Length: 295
Image 1 (cartoon, rainbow, N blue to C red):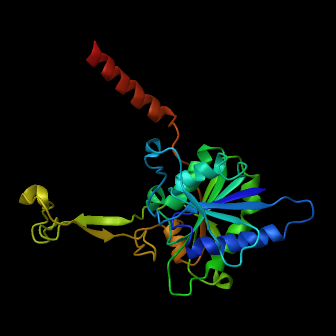
Image 2: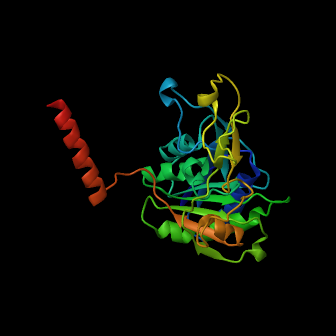
Image 3: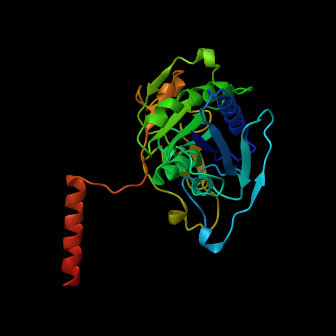
């Protein structure tokens, strides 16, 4: 069993170190004759919010890397790359740092990746990229809270999921989010739906408010004021590191479960062709319209 570890917070992030230390113990605990191998291939710098971006790879012929030391880790090689999480996954899976892995672990991210933030997360983007290469993966994220961060809660849960993920069909991806509580206070683990929580709830120009509470008018902004320069202020939603207001979430949504003290586990899929009657009808109508235009 070979596991590739990456993240989006960067190779020097404490969450990555915590996960790698737990996997180092997992390697050391291998039974006689059992092969366990882990390699870390992670970005040198913070790449949060990178999703599955690889950057302008066609403008360079190589990727710089640097060996990194994680205190307390004896059995795992660690490398930092001048690359995004997704590109790190690709390089680590296609021979850049040894054989193709059996699993990809991404994290531990400091901050939840729930709701619509799943689309934008570099943590999740890394494992979705691996799935395109036929490798199953686990994205691991923890709610930001008071110091010290109880990393063991996330790292121990992640290691416990290795057997199930290894037995799953190739390309399986699981998204794991945990509350910031000691392991003994974790209430359990539940299957979660991807909720509606978003990173950004509103975007407003402070000089020209979008909403008029008196008239109910919705508008404003530079397009009405004629302003050519200024700032757009962002109002953050629930899918932020510390997990904001979840009043609009259902009890079995990922954000709600984490807020209630449970680990949330969600199977997710990446880009793939849509099939079914809805897609068939849409394509038939679209192609008919184009044919009429061309005739």
